[in-house]
Length: 303
Length: 258
Image (tube, rainbow over all chains, first blue to last red; front, side, top):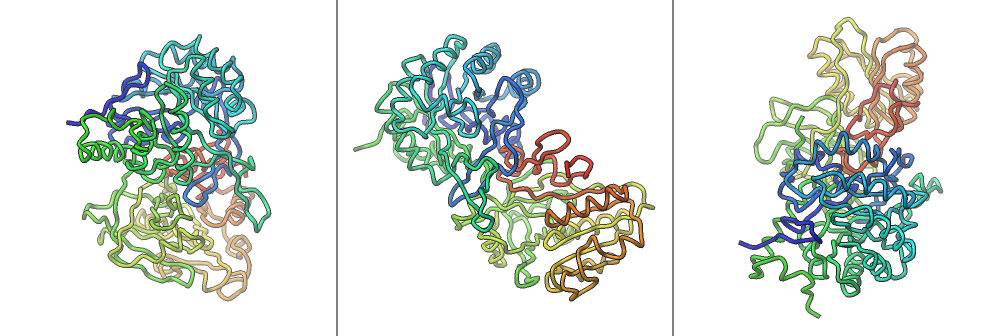
């Protein structure tokens, strides 16, 4: 038997595979396809203080080996989540993590406080890296000063595992990682989407209503791997790697680069069973490599 | 209704015209097709084509219960559908289905029903017409296309019921758009179903509103997941942004801000 469990701060995962926020709904959308209890964790859709309608259609553009999205954090707000969604997902046999988004520090703190009161939510992922909202979002995640401020404020309001999701749209991601670590983050997840753009040449117009959007999918993996590798050298915190993971081999590459756990995002759209297939594939790899525990390959890149 | 991810074995790839094929397929594991409603769709995986990263949403054209075959009408419009149209008998295609909600089948058999289709949008109307007829209705088709050659599966529609046709070049039926067909001035319908290009559906919805007729349209907003998770395919409705894949693709026009 190979041990697949990992810890992210005090958050215990039965295996390193989580599903990325915004790609997996609240988990229930996928229950026709997989046994959710086979996942390490589920990170639910970005939740804000007030309900948000998101951006106008079109919100998506397919690109070579990837896609751009500009959903813009459409969600019904934290109170709706607490009253209507939490009761449906609190007893899932997997770690349910809420992605917390906001436009102001006060918003982030208010949402974090409300989620803190929910017994069955062991962690939040602080989204300071959404490229698709006009205010807040990525603006918080692209300067060490603002990261310090928002992480410090949320840390005071939230006493369970605090994961900070980093933006790749920065010159030096290790500076951002250090800022979050210094203010008490328990873990970092990286990367959020890369800011991109698509144009319809015939119509001479942008494809997305917002002109720019976040790039994800297989095409972003090399960038994500590089950033996980750099951050793993810069901080001591456990990392959650994501960005273009399409199969178990991709996931293992992130573990080797220094991630303790990984998230599957866009790949869920192409294969709704991929998260469980990746969990199984990691286990097979470990057996084949003669490992007794997944810990043996975390940061195990041979230079 | 439970959604499945399943490998389908292609039983036939029939050329319909130079831009379209009719794919017939059956579950590769020999299982029985689930109950599918007219208007529902499948998400087809495209393999070996980096330009088609996401699945392709395709309307269910027909379900042949006897042969346990699913029919999908594919128009070659981009890299993904071009690749899908190349499959051969015996090839495996992975699909997710049945997705979304179907058209309404009215209880009142006296109602006059008009099924309006444009281009490849005729696809779901074959199954809808068949099901309506099975339920005791007498559906009437109004199909439009650019030219005679673009009228897809016309013979199959004629087998079900009466078919009115418009073509933009007058190569078949009346000249013009579906909304200009004389049947609309001669007869009043109680329910109109419509699937086709956006501008056509909007024109039909406008007509339906004018004559105060119930009308359902099938939207084809660009989507990624097909199961209501990514929130990409939203339509701005009277209830705000809703996922076309999950709450549609069929909408009563009263819900739309057209």
